[in-house]
Length: 402
Image: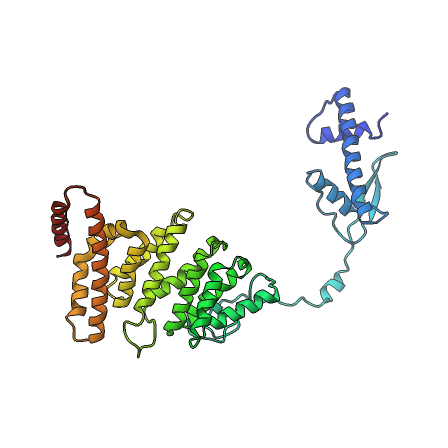
């Protein structure tokens, strides 16, 4: 004899439209209901015992249903005890139901009103460094030195590495002691135990390039530091290449590098160093990042062809293109645009400003070096027709350059 009453199965069947249910189906459904109930109760007992309780609650049943991947019963999560009422629908057939709580209407009316919710409003977010909510990176770029950036993840360094980092940073920024700077760069380029300091050096480079845009010495030291990190074979720099590109790009095509009162050509060695770093990065990491070389070439080409950019930025774009792609990029991107660029460089060379004339000469020198490399590669690729190919190449260049 089953514990579950088969008449309940028939009542449920009739409620969903099944008027005739055979006895065999009723017995099968009754046994299945008993099995499902025992399964739910066993799971609920587990939750009750884990909760160190002796009374099973509705939350235990809900958790058991969730554990069995069954949709839980809703409406029984109240922390107050449920009161069940009994109603009789016939002899020996009691019906239990949850009694509704009686609410005193007078108390409900006289109860204090809840607080009004906060009114919705919108306001513009200032991106300048004018408050605690300002973007610290944009604040640093705007020239505010009193900006603190909190690290997102705690990173514990040993005291030895902390002292090493402080000593290296102070040595690199010491303009009076060349011996310490050389020793610090040599240590970074060869020591194998500097893995934990790589993100700190990357952040140090980005901060110094951002805050010291007028100091050629500091910018040069940051490029030397980047070069030493790239030369250290024991350091894994791949995840930090995207963070190193912006400082290098700033030193390559930056508009106002160095003091305005200094020599106009003082930033050009720095730009050449940055171009050499781009050449090293593209040669070593272009296979792992296929979009690295096209993005760098696109950025350099934009600065080269923009007539509103100063000559120093255009110079950086030219040597950047040559460093990123070599002869192929020069042939595809530089040579076809030389005729249009002639008017820009001619105005600088024929102008009255001595500084712009010298910068124009540097730009012409960079173009000549790129074309010489292109011509040398083309001549070297032909066997037995050196003179004829050279004359053909000269005619093609005259046609495109003018």
